[in-house]
Length: 185
Image (cartoon, rainbow, N blue to C red; front, side):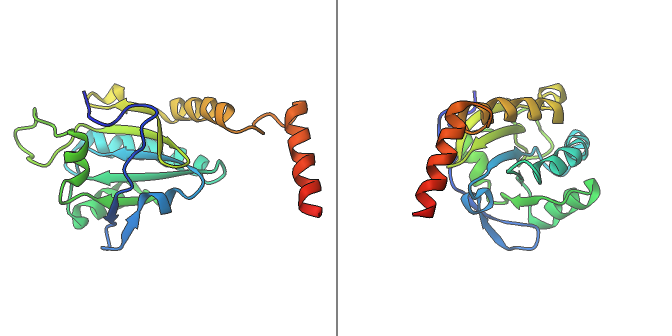
């Protein structure tokens, strides 16, 4: 079992470089939005490339759904850039070349005898504040979530944590009206 990757726990606020060496803090990338983090196996993996190509459509949805997407890879920045370019991705990719993330979660892929740095891939859905909501373990390709599964998960999580998810409810309208009155005073 992965260590420190359970719903309700807080995901560490790692600061890692992107493919250009620019360092990014996860909480800054998340802002007040939801964040879907891909803990990728490594650039060498054809399943990783396929899954990231599937996430292209999901990323388009994220831009209108208050959701960010980040991929963290156990590779040096050049290899991170290669996966990002070969999949056509436009979201932030980060390099965990020092294996800080892999070590923290104890997700080294011990069955891979050819790539010492490989990790067991995970997809983690985080609500604001880097709170872990759901974790997928993608050791087998079918363990990785499809864009439709992520849509369903994020819809259920938003309905639970956003008080105005259904603005037709009387409680939602009353809260909005109270906020509007307070803002005008």
